[in-house]
Length: 196
Image (cartoon, rainbow, N blue to C red; front, side, top):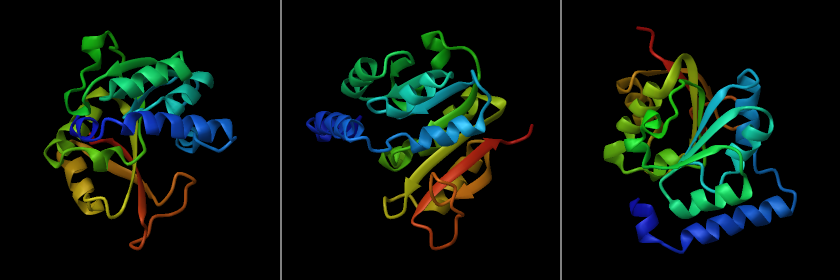
């Protein structure tokens, strides 16, 4: 929420940016295509930090039950306008409780793109990952991507994920499946729940 309060004009700029990219025919749903390839049709998917809805909208259009969550009401408003169909919830990810919103089925996948993890307050990162684990089905997966140099070292992220009960299944350096190396400047982590 601090990000929203610190720069109130950012939301409208962000909304217009993705509207312009979509109008120009740019690929704005690469992250969603990866999730679609990972899950069966009619899966339950969360777009965590969904912004103006580009990925949630795509996943809904190809046949998934989608929930988009974002802390910014302006972004949720744009998502509802531009990409109707998914269920959208205004919530801080560190306080996310989907059953309280009537969304009780466990999730098959969680997508967290757009450097969302790096925008979180450091004190909430592990709690957000715990909330992800709590909402996942036993064989569900969380797919989280963010870049280097954003104040969240990749090893700290993996330590926080372990503390939250999530274990890495695959590490990539891009949404188009390029392998992760020690020199990678971006991380796409596929995480599953730790076996009980």
